Length: 161
Image 1: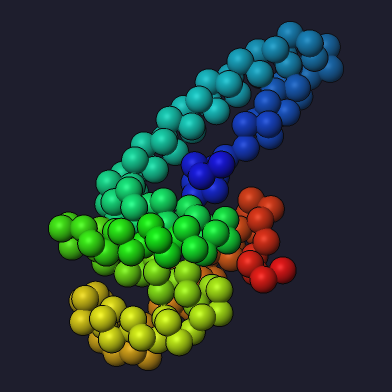
Image 2: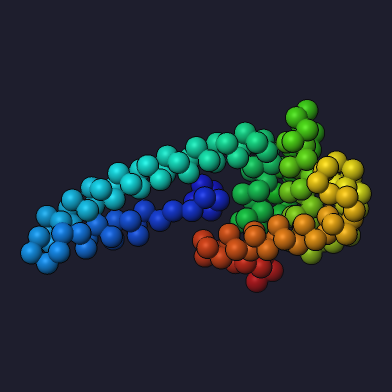
C-alpha cells in the first residue's frame, strides 16, 4: 500500500494492455505475448519505484517516512508519533523532515494551534524558509500535493470526510 501510495503504478492496467496486443487474427497469442511484455515492464517499473522509495526513505529517515505514509492514510496520531521520533534524529535532514511531517499532520487534522507553535522552529531550521508566512504558504502547497496523492489512490482527500 505505502509504495503504491507514494510512487504509483497499476499492474492491473498494464496486464489489461496485454490483452489487446497482436490484433484480431492473433488475439490469443498476441495477448499472451503482450502480457509477458507487460509483466516485464511492470517488474521494471516496480523495481524503479522500490529504488525511489528506498532513496526517499534514506533521504528523510525511516521515522519520517513512516509518518509520511501514516499522514497519507489519515492516521494523524501515528504520523505525529513517527514525526516526533524523527525530530530526535542526529541527522539534521531526518529531524527537519520529522518537523515538517508533524506540522503537516497537525494542519491536516485542523489542529492549527499546535502547528502554529512549531512554525518559528521551522523557520529557524529550514534554510529555504525565511518567514512564518512563507512557511504557511509552503505547508498549504504540501497539503495540496498530499490531497492529490490521496485522490490518485482512492483515499479520502480530506481526512474529516
